[in-house]
Image (cartoon, rainbow, N blue to C red; front, side, top):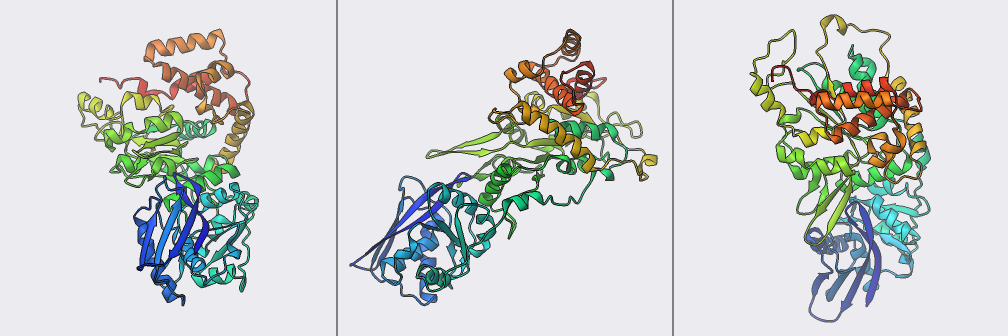
Length: 512
């Protein structure tokens, strides 16, 4: 007898429908899985066999063929265990087939018949809705993330027996419902706040500009100046996520397996801080079975690279594409996968190898050539893609005393959100452009019209600092953001002057 169960599998961060066809025929006992199954899928036959027996069902001792259609796409993961088990029960007439119409089934089975969570369930639920299916049945631990998909009957089960009882109509499983709007309305209370940062008014201003325009940022300062402290507070002043942003971010974390247990949506912007020993595949994504890297896990949030020159050169250079395009494309012999990677880069480095170049309180032990060699570990093309170069000086002891007038993250975030509203209105109808940092050359001509005074200032900056064409455009983008924070319609000389100050690495250190 032949049974057909609807399921889904993940490719990249999206899912596609999979038809699990199970045929049981006379012949010597065998179990064959076809349709390009990968390791975890092939091993599923052992899990399914033990689960059926331990759950009180009979495993058919006949010739069993399982086809996973479409057969030209490689399937990976353990999410096809449950549909294969249900298909075996239907094909062996231990379970009626009428109850499975229009229902997508995914899940991993344990040897005793329990159901375990799988990755990418949110993507599978979205794919099921897009395919016009009535509902989806998932392991109970995956229920919160699947339930955010509206217009779909979402049910969860803890055991194979509960699944069979539901499909047979004996014990229907209740539908799960989650209100995405309510989840988005609840802003998580931040554990850190800019009010904790003493002094560093110029640095706070630069981070506010970066957050308002989505600009990449590099902080240069001696050890203990507060670079990491500032970077960890950057997400607290970013605007709240929209539902579409939250869904896309949640899909990435679900596929990567980093979604917290019981979490429905990623409503807080991510903050990722990988160690400098990370590999290029860990940062950008990849592996024998491609998975999202840190740049994709930071999508919609902040990627913080501390001690930037300590990262291997080849690791840093792979950042060029995501910084420029907002996506990562991983090409393999059989498939090319594209992961979203629209993040804010916040990086930090010391001014020299010993860390105290230019610090008036500590003598620098580095020769001028050593300073140049240390800074050259970060290539010029990568620096060009970082909009703001910020010098963070050490904080004097007298400035460490708490002050009541330190601005909180909430106050700064309110200004950032007002600037982002202006940008969203400006870029209405533009695909992939929602902040000033994403403007193209055509956008710069349209939205950053300059007066003759501004043009003269920009020419002087290019001639004196040796700015590249890309750096010139970065200055204009930053100036446009500063004007938005001032709610000014046109970019003026003060805006451009402040923007030029944020290109400190375009000026060589004295004596180098």
